[in-house]
Amino acid sequence: MNNNFIKNLAILIKISAIVFIFFILIASAISCMSLKDLNSYITYTIKERLTNTNDTSLNDFEKGEEIMLPNPKLESKVSLEEALNNRRSVRSFSSKELSTEEISQLLWAAQGITKENTGFRTTPSAGALYPLELFIVKNDGVFHYIPDEHKLIKIISEDLKSNLAQGALSQDFIADASINIIITAIYERTTAKYGDRGTRYVHMEAGHCCQNILLQAQALGLGAVPIGAFDDSYIQKLLNLPEDYIPLYIVPVGYKEE
Ligand SMILES: Cc1cc2nc3c(=O)[nH]c(=O)nc-3n(C[C@H](O)[C@H](O)[C@H](O)COP(=O)(O)O)c2cc1C
Image (cartoon, rainbow, N blue to C red; front, top):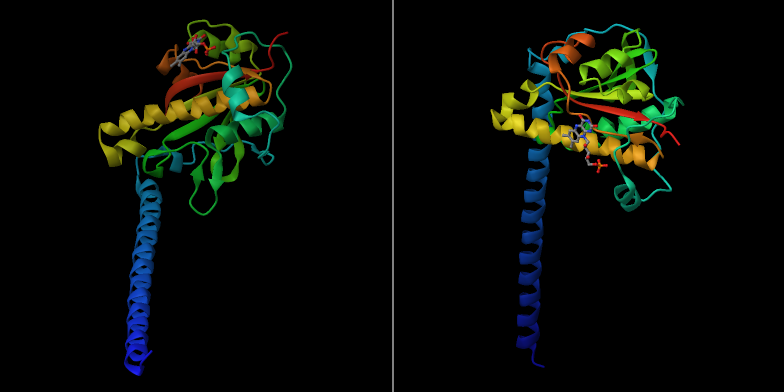
């Protein structure tokens, strides 16, 4: 090998190394920019929600007793496939009450926070705007679920289960379930950004949320059923909900009657 060939080879290697480093730098800059974009998107959607003055969730309409819920379990002996295969609507419930752990697990499956720094939840949400608000109706009253702190706030101290059943075209099994999860939506949170199409997104999200509850109930060995037949304004008045909280689903959950 002559000296010229070795020199040329060295130059070629140097040029290749410079080109390679150049491309690495460009690729890192692009990925940093998209991370920054994502970050500003998340901050933007959270800011949007906080500055939406019509949003009554920011008005402290509830000042009752607070119940901190235990942390949810992130493992189970029931596979997702088993839960999907065995889920069936259940309309006969025993008188056994759900434990606080079971209630915690169901609410976490419905709307629990799964990423602390962004506030992302178990259920997906268009633009991460989270239009759903959940309430539970049980023997000792009505409670509002606060995902950020995984806690309940008592808003009513009466047992309204029989009235709830009445407002749902007298589907009496509603009164027998240990708890009823009421999925409500504040449409404005989503339509403010997406216009009319936001209405579609809110309904999709209620479906995601409800299915999570049904599958979690199945995995816990509990029975549940999605209820869509009810009088919206009756339920709203019964639970003393602000005008913009529209009830979309009632989900009775309890131990199955043997
Ligand atoms: C949007 C929607 C509304 C429903 N409303 C009611 C209802 O008001 N009462 C009821 O008993 N079941 C209701 N169901 C449950 C269906 O009757 C049930 O899912 C269907 O019979 C299939 O049975 P499965 O859930 O066991 O698969 C509803 C289901 C959906 C998806």
